[in-house]
Length: 134
Image 1 (cartoon, rainbow, N blue to C red):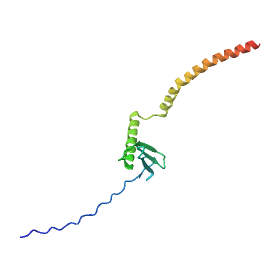
Image 2 (cartoon, rainbow, N blue to C red; image 1 turned 90 degrees about the vertical axis):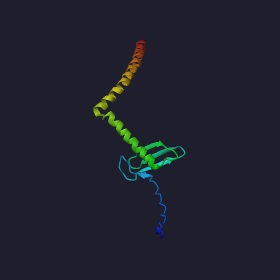
Image 3 (spheres, rainbow, N blue to C red; image 1 turned 45 degrees about the vertical axis):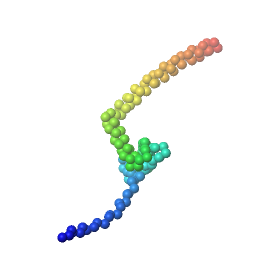
Image 4 (tube, rainbow, N blue to C red; image 1 turned 60 degrees about the vertical axis):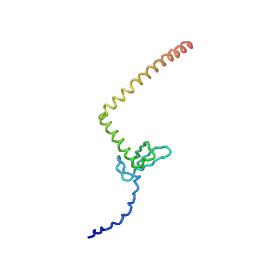
């Protein structure tokens, strides 16, 4: 009695590695393939720029960084920024204008004080000259 023969399998061909994308869809303007990623290996900085809306992003890179990593960092940082803005709450136009007025008020008051101090000696000086000429 002998063993049954196994059917021999032919080795499969090696799978081709598809290159990762370097252009992506913008998360702000939603145009497809409008965001280009570039990596400056010398400076170790990754740049991302949308050709349509002009959004840009920079992040640190290393020798393993790929364009998809920069895109993922951009998504993560924009989500973090939106969460931070949501925690602070929306700014209404009335609050924004009031905040701007209060932030300018001390500066304007200080300038008015300086102007008043500078103006007083000038007036005296002008009055003194006008008295001498008469």
